[in-house]
Amino acid sequence: MIRYFTAGESHGPALSAIVEGVPAGITISLDDINTQLARRQQGYGRGGRMKIETDKAEVLSGIRFGKTIGSPITLVIKNRDWENWTTIMAQFDQPAEEITKITIPRPGHADLAGRIKYGFDDIRPVIERSSARETAARVAAGALAKIFLKALGIEIGSYISAIGSAAEQAPEAQLPQLLDKGAEAVSRQADLSPVRMLNKSTETDAVAAIDEAKQRGDTLGGIIEIFITGVPVGFGSYVQHDHRLDAALASAILSIQAIKGVEIGTAFENARKPGSEVHDELYYSPAEGVIRKTNRAGGLEGSMSSGETIHLRAAMKPISSLVTPLQSFDVETLQPTPSRFERSDTCAVPAAGIVAEAVVAPVIANALLEKLGGDHLDEIRQRLELYRESIRRSFCS
Image 1 (cartoon, rainbow, N blue to C red):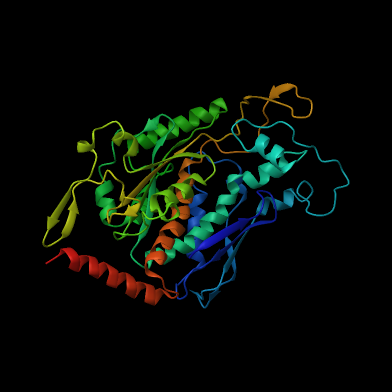
Image 2 (tube, rainbow, N blue to C red):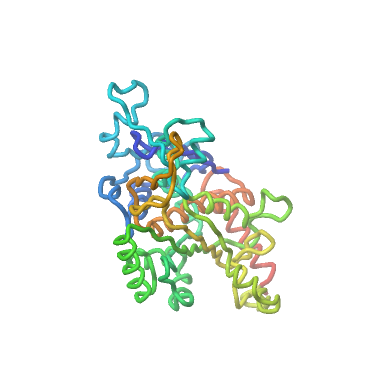
């Protein structure tokens, strides 16, 4: 099974990830990983940090001659901005000059709870590790799982359906045609847009909304649409809570900084309708087997994959660090004061879509490995082909 850990601070020397459980025999190139890191840095509304960093991964273990060897893979992403923070973020020697402590927490951030939890007299350590800069390491780690899944015909893609009040009124018309080509086709089309939207009119509104928010010193959130194609029926299980695929996917997405809600399929719309208008009716065709004409369940039934496209929707709140401050107080003097500003984006929703793709990849990979097992790509591929064939034989004459 695949698991990974990340380490590093936002303004420390580097971010790192150790990824364990990746099967042997998977062809990997640095370009595959760095392309995902570059995608994460794009998007209209990003802040000054993206002009400083050009994220590139270094591989320190687990790959030989361009193929995984089954041992842990170590990834390192150096922070170019570290050279400007060597005093403030010194790891061992206490700086000769006094470092100004941060004592004013930002509403909506980890600042206050983190300071209390870990007993700090300075909020800086909380800011450094809770920062969404950490997601660069997760995107690099998730890229490995995405490559593994792609080799087995499973693809993950995303686009943005809303930024602030700029929201598509109905699912984009071209979406079914793109999904027929695989979920990555959705991402390729979305990546052509500065806000990763499919609808040009909504894109124009979103860009204008970001400009307006930036002028006000405000921030914007939005909604991310995530799709996974090629997953056969029967991944995950209903027998125990920790084997439920829907729960694992939701957990992964909610682990992303600033994500506050997850929806599977059209769950919230379904909640307002009777069951007769919600559940995806089943049909049988001798040529095609089991058919569903709708996918309101989002590709997950009974906590398992249904064989349809998995569709997840994530709600990202506006970023907590605002140029125009909200009300706060100084934790040392207890006096009311405006919250402080930490360098930030106006809108990071397009980038969060890339992170969402990355974090769901190990979840799907583990559901596959739980079902099929295997230590090498070739044997896993053979088992998956046999499983898919057994499904076809069960229903097709």
